[in-house]
Length: 298
Image (cartoon, rainbow, N blue to C red; front, side, top):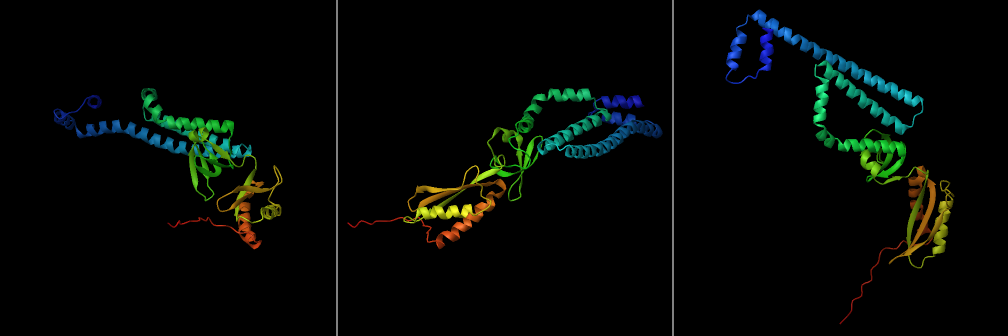
């Protein structure tokens, strides 16, 4: 009877012979029928059960390996940029090995499975072209190091602190605490503005004053504000103030100074407030745009 079921699985049932096949099956004694069904189902059930057990144990081992790898990398003081990339690579590699093991346990011929993947290589390659590009971009970022974890960068239209560099993407935390995930491919090929590379940044203010105001006194006033703040640096250059341009309704004084990257925004907003409160108190005027209209009679 088992031989008959094996032959039945290999044959194609259709509407014409299905009735005959069912009649033949029901003609077997019930005990023999149940015994044959159990003899066929038990090996399959055991394979499925073993696959579930292997998956559970494998997933647990992968978590343990990742945890131990993370601890080991932290003890060896590995670069945080490399640590995120390596952890991602280990996770993906172990997961693929686990999947291949389960496929083998279920009785699927891994050679045939590999041949199937090879046959669909073109389609898979096209579908994964973006992923492969992002992987290559991640390798380029780790090799050339245009930025590292903790740097404040501007790239792909976003600004933020690099939180993690993974195998295919980079995680940025924006100043308003948004998490931006940027693919490594476009990131490695695009323009990157790294504000943390040198540790210092230049701050600039443009102050519009009315025509007739004393520009020398205005320059001295803004320079005194900058020089009195301990966060202002004298290297790579001392604070500077000068006449930038003469606009239609105002003259524009520009002031510049250098600060640590971490002090940039605090100093910028502080000096803005000082300009707004101190300049009018010293007799300077902030002009509004004006337009003179002349009407000709005639």
